Image (cartoon, rainbow over all chains, first blue to last red; front, side, top):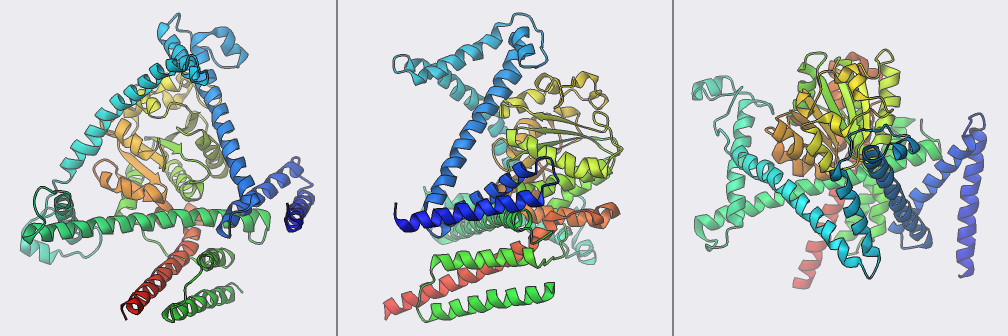
Length: 273
Length: 304
């Protein structure tokens, strides 16, 4: 490593070491003050290390990235063991194992169906061996098949049938703004977002938007004339949708930044209350 | 002091943006790190010198708010915390506000999580909102936490017909058969409302697909902004209302403060976050304008 690298690393270690000491002193009255001071300092260091990538790739970023991946993998492995195997399986298989792991035993007698996932789980782990790796394909096929079967029915109902029927909108308004003639519409004209006019406009936008959006993806006819104009409107609708998605994405990312900056200012630097 | 801070930061941000626009018109490029610095200042300044805006609940937010408000006291509400710390800045304010609203209205609330990380965040809501604000409410009678259960959509597929089969005990190991709140709850169909909070998988979408539609239970959702556009098509038929990102949380908090006097004195993180949000969005819009100016300028030069 170059001399400058040593100096930068030493400076960062010194800075965050000092931060730990200062926090520990300010929390000296608390029972776990030193531990909490370390956690806050470490969290601040990791936050800044991750954001340092915005300047350029560097060893601090690499350290934080690898730590994040490692901790995540370990966390999820422990969670899977304690919640699935200890929490779901052992209480149904063995009273001895349940009491060892301090789980309430769910006495259900001998039940072969609880052993099937155990056997499939062991077969899945066979992937780690070269000789018996082929055995992992059976449980994998079971997972893929079950997921596809479960999702097929749900998605067909909620994302297709109900969605199609949801686009059959009453174009002149619905309850509580049912159409009662043009005179009633004018005399009760309400320009608010919950009024009849907004409901009618909204329903027309969905009606026209869906039809034009589908026309854009219909390639068996040349997009010219009235069909072409509808197709062009369809692409406008799609662009507006992508714009809304982009806006929401920006809002989400800024929220994360607000969360981290608030942490740095409030918990680490303690310059806001 | 705060007003002075706001004025100085505005001058720095918009003065800098005007300078960058001038440079772009002259044909000079803006380095990407400059954009990061501006975003940082636009977010940090309103945190240091708070700027708040008045929010009004949109119909999609009001849908969920009014449903909770009009349910008779004692109604059974299930709130699922299906998110992780990465989504917490957006979703936690919604979780706190909705939990407060339900308990303030006298509903019986069951908390659960399909994400392992959600259980810790659920614990935060219990400790930060429920125990200090509702010290008289009894665990197991007025509210209960069943905690996290592994299995993703599989869990939903079971609890839609038999809740206790998947959750035989609460988070403390107390059998659900022995707690009064579960006397009349056997499956998800027995809830008067389910609120799914999250943004990943499994999350609000899976609640609609696996529970809301098959069991015909009203579902309200609070989601991270990134997935909000994917859930709009479900409104109003398959979800009764939606809080999309921190904007949705701010609108809900605003409505809650208007209609429930007690909430006015509580922390409103969603509303506070709208200051940095608004300023950061204005800066991004300005950069889009600057980028377009630079693009058309360079195209005209090439044309000449």
